[in-house]
Length: 261
Ligand code: NAD
Image (spheres, rainbow, N blue to C red):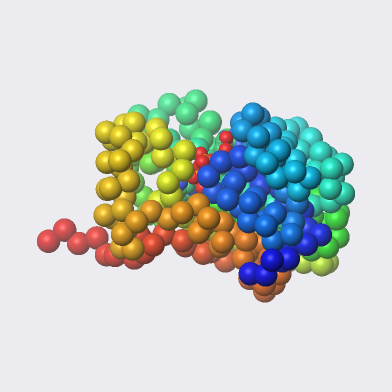
């Protein structure tokens, strides 16, 4: 990717204060763009934006709230004059099987991972269309949107929903002039803050990372910047005819057949 792929372009990245979202913000700005770090973690978002000078602003956003989305889009337009790219990276994990899932937890996880992505697609599409330069939406699913795990019941459900949501959005988005694209990235295991609750449950971070590395054919976890590279490709004009597509970045995690004999 060239240094200036995103010159004159503006991206709003949810979950942009941490992990995959933050790596995406850094990559977008490094390639000439300006970024809105839209995150519920106000303090961290402000720190991250300050580190990027006039190339980024922080916006406090709870992705599950439609009024908050409307305010975030207005803040983006006020600061940078328009919007070209939305990356829906905000997400939370939750460990529970179906029978143990309380309705409040269901609504919380669906609200952030699924409704949050829907609102980002809806308001992102409208704002990108209004800006009138074409553009792209990139949604973040997971390998857990492909393969089920009994203890990942709600997370599995939301991440599978994001995959189909992106395809349906891609069909609507293609009708705009200039067209807008929508694609999905499916990360494997990435060492970010989202792993912390699972690490606590499974005997610590070191043990978790060792187990995840062993499960991954490439022998290590994926780095957040390696996920960001796929996101930035899909966000760029280099992917001008790629829409409704998925890129799995998992070091081969989803490839092996599970044989128990
Ligand atoms: P992370 O915890 O480092 O970052 C998530 C960010 O989302 C945080 O900055 C957090 O403050 C923000 N966030 C949480 N709730 C929010 C809300 N309601 N509104 C706005 N922001 C909110 O985790 P990450 O690994 O960078 O996760 C990014 C995405 O990647 C998530 O959608 C996650 O499901 C997905 N993913 C991660 C992995 C992995 O192994 N790390 C694997 C597959 C998919």
